[in-house]
Structures are given as C-alpha cells and as structure tokens.
Image (tube, rainbow, N blue to C red; front, side, top):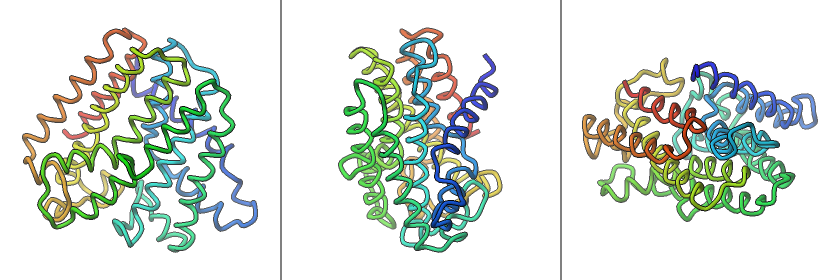
Length: 292
C-alpha cells in the first residue's frame, strides 16, 4: 500500500464530510460561520479522524458504515481545542496551519465563540450516530475533552507548569491528557463503532496510548529543531526554558529514544490484526519520522 496516497484519500473523504456538516458561510450570522469554516477547512493532517477510520477498519477489515460522521466530529473537537489554545490567554499564537490564527483573523470574541460552536456541533453530530454503542462513544469523547485526564485537565496542568520544574510523572500526565486523550478516544471510538470485542479494544487502546504520547514527544522535539515555515505554527526554540517538554526534562537524544520505543511497542500491539492494521502501523512510524 502507498501510505501517503491512502492518507491523502482519507483526508479528502473527511474534508468532504466536514464541508457538508459545517454551516455554510452565507448562513446568518455569517461572521461565526466564516470563522468556523476558516479554522476547520484551513488544512491539517486529519490524524485523529483517520485514526478513527483505521481503527474501525482494523476490526472489520473494510470501511465501516457511517464512520465518517464520528471521524468528522473528532476533527471538529480537535479544531475547537486549537482555536482556544491559540488565544492570548493561553498560548497567544499568531499562526496555525500556516495561516493567521482564528482570533487574529476574526477577533478574540468570535474565535472563542467559534471554538464553542465547533464543540457544540460535534456533539450534535455524535447525537445522530446510528450505532448500538453510541452512548458509550459519546461518554468516551466527553471524558477525553474534560478535566479528569482529558484535554482541559492537561491544558490546565501545562499552564501551571510554565517556568516551573516538573517531574517525569507530571510531564507524562500533561502530554497524555492534553494530546494523548483525544487520540486514544479516536482509536477507541472507531473500534467500538465497528463492534470490537474486549480483547481487540484493549490492544487498540494500548496502541493509541503509546502513539499519543510518542506524537507529543515528537512535537516537543520539532519545537526545538524545526522552523515556523516547516511547522505552519510558531517554532518555540526557547520553549524548553519555559514550558514542560520532554527535551527540556530528558534532552533531545533520550526523547528521541523514548519516542522510538513507544512506537515499536505500539506497533507490537497490532500484530494480531495482521494486514488490517497496516495503516495504523504506518501512521505510528510516520509520526516518528517527523522528528528527523
């Protein structure tokens, strides 16, 4: 399989669904709908929705019916979190996906409301899911967003760790919550929607937890090593002095080794799925190559 071409097809599939789910830019009030579409449709690798699609495929060996709605809801949630993370009160970033951030383009008030609207729309989409496990999936995603080991809890812990020395345990909590929780939920929800059994779900959960942490470690490495032009967002070459990151705590070399070990362990969890999980393995190894 040509992984790059396959991922491009999956991105196109999700983008088509997102365009249909988002309110048209011409719908009143136009300002909020323009901001929502600008932020969602302005690029992005669609890693979380693709993880959802591929987890379902690993279970059933084919495209699962109706999975695009669930996958698209994950992207709406992810984009909401990016809009809010970029705000002056949080990371105060000017660029996202190579373009001005939502608050720079539309103002802070509209950006806050656009994030709120995307999260609300995501749960409207989730409420229409036609799967026997829809209630469990909605609960799973709500928990992944929340304060107890979810994105918001991770963001709070990250803010509180600024300019402070943190332990390896605290840093792992921040990364597993702020980034890893939604990736874990993406894989688990896709597997549940496809009817995964308990053993399959547990293996995919362990894969997702390892990949989610590796993803954020690689992001930390890129913030030290890369450029704003390459990342499409500000490269924080001085972030290691102010933010809780793996290179700041462990150094670049050890961080690379840890990310590589996590990816290998994640891929080992996929062996019982055989070729059905080839794309999930490819995604894990692609995430690691980003740090090179």
